[in-house]
Length: 447
Image (cartoon, rainbow, N blue to C red):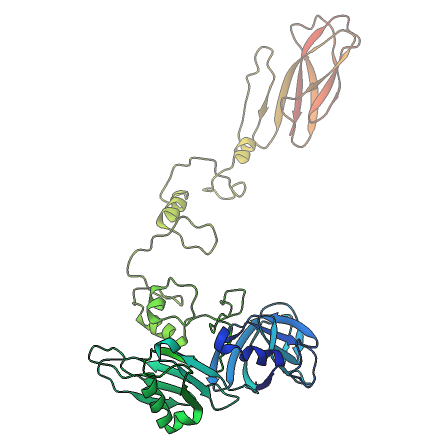
């Protein structure tokens, strides 16, 4: 962005006139607005202010030019056509243009910098020392629209008085004695400054009224005759995080090697250097061959997890060995055998050989299954006089019942019990013509 030519307002000029008594003017707010116009020194506020920002940092890049930085991470969106510099509540300087020179969207953080060129800055006056000590000098700037700096320096032992100029900054190297104490008087300093052509073009120097100039001067740091400062001159951009745009330091090689810092950035050069220094003992992601054992955290829980020896051994122990083994549970086969050496299922054995689950003695019920599937069943029943009683076969006939009979038993009492009906699972015994409770065996044949 091009330099913006600010003008100092009348209120700002009033502040500058008090620099020698109240200290430098400090710009602590930057106001931005949306109105475009020709600015006037009589203004005391922006025409259409949007908001005020606190400067992030500033520096004097050249006499009369101040570089200022600011940021706005809010969700506000705007176009800036006017800027005002505030010293406290006083509008110190102002700039405006009919064309927007700064824009911000709602989704972006505005990080911007501007060179502020201050016009109509009056010449400044610096008074040094104390009149009562006869070492006071009055130094006045001879130029306008620029800052003139003056510094008195005490450095070393047995140094000679000298004056040097860099740009608009004058440095007076004071004379010292054998112990490093200053020996230059106000008069000798005045004479040395005026004798330097470059320094004399920048300032006029005289003994302050009431001071003879015979007193020893004191050292002071670079001081600007028309002092204008902005903020704290300390950069304070937001720190960059995973969610906040901002600034961060570049990591040193030591930080990259340590691998513990999470607030700095790694450059490609340092990353490549670190990767090249890693020992070959590490397993590469693209594939590698281990030279030793790899101990895992536990058994796998996902299909593609690596498996430890214990998991494989446990799974192997569940298999039946081909050389012979002892089962600890049931073995379910795919079906009945079809070859002489196939293992037979229970259902095949049950339907292929004679099977007698109960003995046909006394009052017991039971059945016999013959090879080929034919089944004989019997059941002892008791039927009360003049009633019919339903009964259930010991087992259900799988397919059909062929016939059924009632056989006389010892407790029949000479009565006749008839079989009223049968199915694969049950039947009905009829004693409706009997006068007493009768017992009998029911016989059924089926398959």
